[in-house]
Length: 156
Image 1 (cartoon, one colour):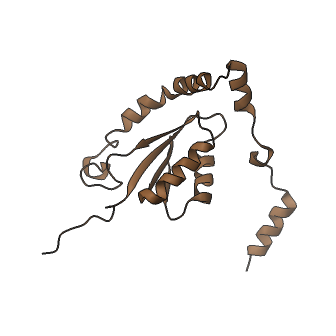
Image 2 (cartoon, helix red, strand yellow; image 1 turned 90 degrees about the vertical axis):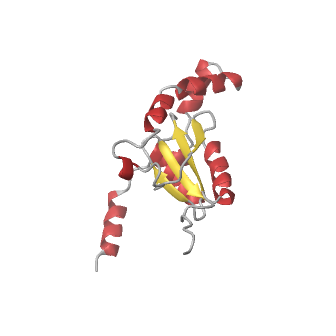
Image 3 (cartoon, one colour; image 1 turned 180 degrees about the vertical axis):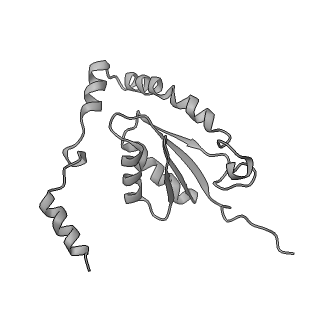
């Protein structure tokens, strides 16, 4: 009888928590998709869940942290997605550990504030840094004429 080897063997999963005035989990997911190479990225209510080989995940995590270093937090996931020992599909209800995430997220704003202080920023500078957002990052409304052209180009 062949030994069962789970399909997640050799992978790591990291949680990316976002408590940023500049980025939402959606913004971060789009940025992560743009720079990822074969890594599984799942957007969550608190940020992202990133799964892949350590060689793929670590550089992506480093790049993600650079988007807003004092407001993005990384945590290792103890069990891989779908693991029969911990999957809520097998246990019912919220995934074990989720309530811990919720508790932690209530406190990260204090950690962010402390990181800003360590970086030498006062409250005014921290608020100004949070308010700055590069022009290319700001959402631009889509010109209705361009939208019409896009729709017409897709019609058979």
